Length: 81
Image (cartoon, rainbow, N blue to C red; front, side, top):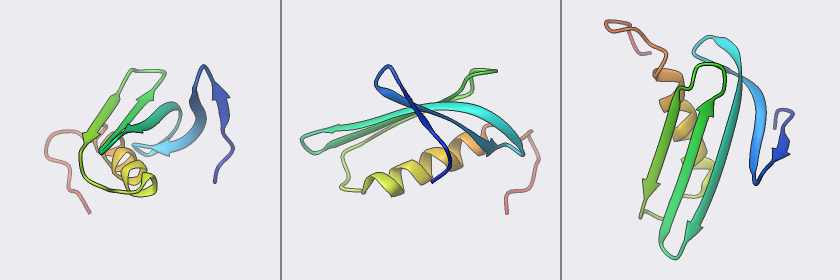
């Protein structure tokens, strides 16, 4: 796992998102059968929030959040590989 830091109940790290290194923060959690993930790139405010009542594990939910945040930097007409 890349270097990360704990801050106010969430996590902070620099990761490659949208083709550039960005400082991101995230929090995840669950309550009963529900799961939540919130991700944000600090410099420009790109944000993804995923709410789910599926039994995905946290790694899958985290991967989904990363992919959605990454794609939020794509311009209209960009090709997704």
